[in-house]
Length: 144
Image 1: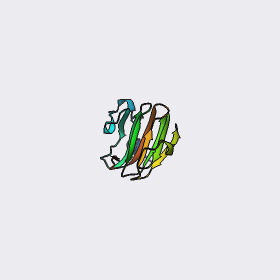
Image 2 (image 1 turned 120 degrees about the vertical axis):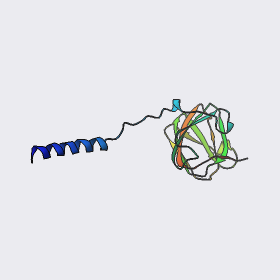
Image 3 (image 1 turned 180 degrees about the vertical axis):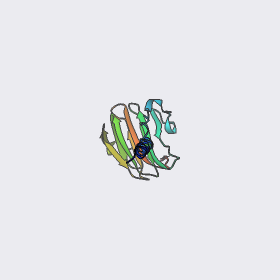
Image 4 (image 1 turned 180 degrees about the horizontal axis):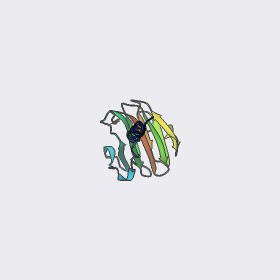
């Protein structure tokens, strides 16, 4: 191989390696997100970390519940999986808030809420933080 060909091959390899290298990951910091009280619920704060309920595709929604906070029976049009990051989240399925029908979901565990399945939540034992994931578009309908 001639010197010119060798230099050309090396230049091509260098250019290819520059285009193949991925950018550095961009951290998403929950404390820098726009937190709000979803549906005006007392003691509940939520922030969209990835996507939104109006967008198509994957989303991540972080929720913080103050001690004793409750989320009344509600549904979502999509299946959601929720991972408990801090505390113990109490979850029940049904159209009315029934403390006796609730199950403790401890820190590090997750639960699945199938699409259109009424469910309700409670931070019974103290503050809770959890993260929901699903495929949008989505939404929340509080049952009355």
